[in-house]
Image 1 (tube, rainbow, N blue to C red):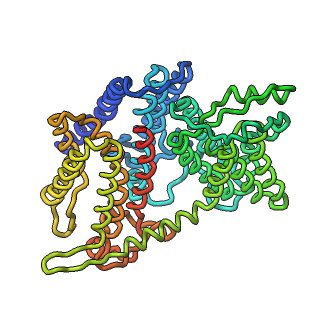
Image 2 (cartoon, rainbow, N blue to C red):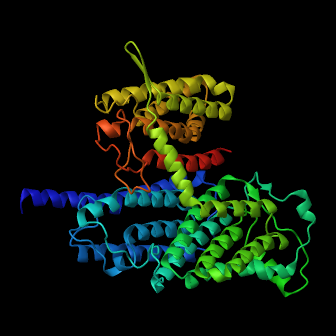
Image 3 (cartoon, rainbow, N blue to C red):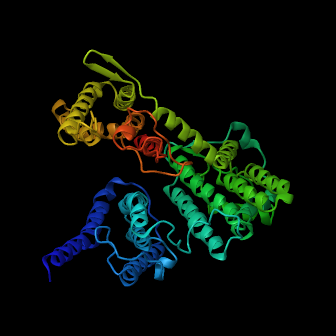
Length: 542
């Protein structure tokens, strides 16, 4: 055996050991260590967790063996297989190993009653896998095997006018409606927040409950579930799926960050429909009410039906309106819930237009470079964004902690700025990159600065927590600076997705030589993500 082969074998063994043994052990230790600090409920019935864990293990093992069998290699990014695999389990799923491993984590945490594993380790690991797939593996596979790789059977419907296949219809249930149900039930499991606010106006409490409208309210489930079966083109089904997935993500964030609840109005049942309404209420909870998913799904479904059967379009839209009204007449939702659901549905209808508007704004910012020279000093307009972000961050920290922490917060901010500058010059230093600050240096400076808090009799963890809440908003404004300077730009993208840099001072122009080439607006992606988890961190603090 040659030295090269031995080196490769040892590297593959150590790489596999890291992900097969070390990583699972670290995740287990993380779950155990964080359990006491995650005071959230875990389902009491353990058998579903066992089933999910076994299913996840089977998917993972099958994915590994099929990769080795058909790909003639190992399921490792550092030692990738020689062939693209589209047989075995890969005929049905693109990433059975990641999917199975995440299901294994979820099922194990559920079965063991681990709140740290259920609410922290599993979702963070799942997000990490998604990031790895879309940020690295997808592009790596296209480079190695070419574009236009065969799609697995379980995937979003195609963007065409052909009649959807049976598998495409089934995929909508698996990839869209099932994840929505899981997210909805998870929010219900969280229970009523301690600072919950009723969404009902005072006058709504006196409104009667019309039991017969349960026919309309309960019929929503059938109205939605039949969409994949009756949609007349893959494009209609794809638009329904994309809007549904987008709505699931956005509404889930609102569910956990906006403490509005809707405790159903009380009534005495007088017939079968009244008892059916009470039974349905027993399966639900006052949470997960704003905005109303009944309204959202009703309008998304009505659009799909109206596009499939345009002669009946008025009937479909009328059905969506009646479903929305039934949310109030059954006493299940407040007026605010219904209006919020309607607003979200309208937003989902305009997702493409909203994205193009955001993209256009990002492109204008990216080409807004201005500078002024005063002797040897040069002022660049993008510096204002970093300054605004720092001021907003300090304002958040000061608001959260009060006067006693103002001076330490200023000291920590200064430590972060100095550390970021040193990091950029001595670790990432490069005259061509023109990088005045290094992000990771700033994080290290904040952490090190917080260590001085106990010397002043202050709580370092409280300081770090407050800066964590402020960090997403600081970075969001910092990403505007990235747009102008041209750093952190993405790879070439389709014209409808990317933005073009045409300013000669942008690093995209004079370093990357990608002037006027559509590029992924990665700073914009970062801004949107920062806004999402910034809301979640603020809610956790409150």
